[in-house]
Length: 305
Image (tube, rainbow, N blue to C red; front, side, top):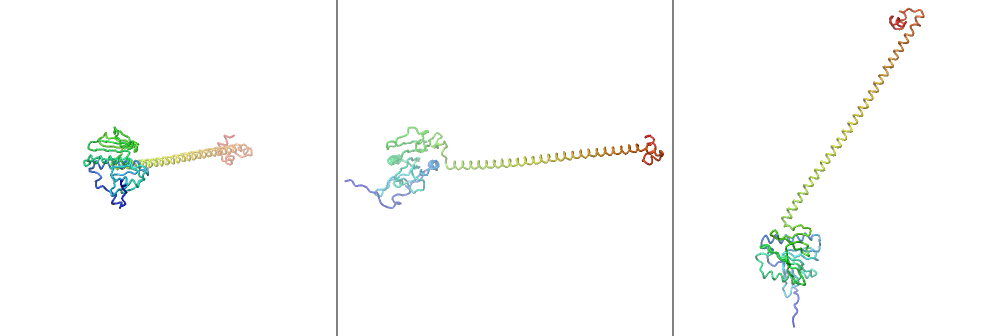
């Protein structure tokens, strides 16, 4: 009779360690690619709470049996259907038995063929849907897609579009590059930081330009207001000058009328004196007496006769 192996009931830290004792990467190129892919995919699904992305995290697909826990630590793994959050390891049997659907491995000189074959078999056995293997030293990218519980090789990886991620793979520029569905290349931390700084500087410059434009518009508005006020003042002064000129014209007209009236009165008085001359002479007054009485000269009296 075959004995059925039972899961081991023991301390989780002993059965499921957090580390396999291997470094995250053997060189800067490998580290940069791992962090770029992990960070880029994590950012791509940042708004989806049910996409978990991890780098160099131990994945335990099943519970330990007789003190042995099977595990692998993909350089990058993506799990659709599991919430984001920190984990000491990914225990699939505690995660609704959902296996990572997408895994990445970045080769280094320390990786052996036997080791990579063991990883391939592990990923195939425990449900990985997309497996990507990249060698930075040779710029060779390989991929496998799950069909009928097997990982079958993808014929041409250049320009390949991941069914799960929606990302495009390129290596034409001498290194692996992933492009988001919107066409944006996944950047390194330094590139992202520089771009963010440049965007911040551009935003600051735009803000300063907008502020300067606002100040110029305000100044133009103030100048226009001042011009309007000056024009209004000039109009008021012109109106006042017109009113003063009209008043002067009226005063001159009045003076002319008074002068004319004075002249008429003087003429009337002179005519009255002339009219009085015959009457006074008729009363027996002499020419000299009439001239004195009327305030005329003797010649004026004689001219009136």
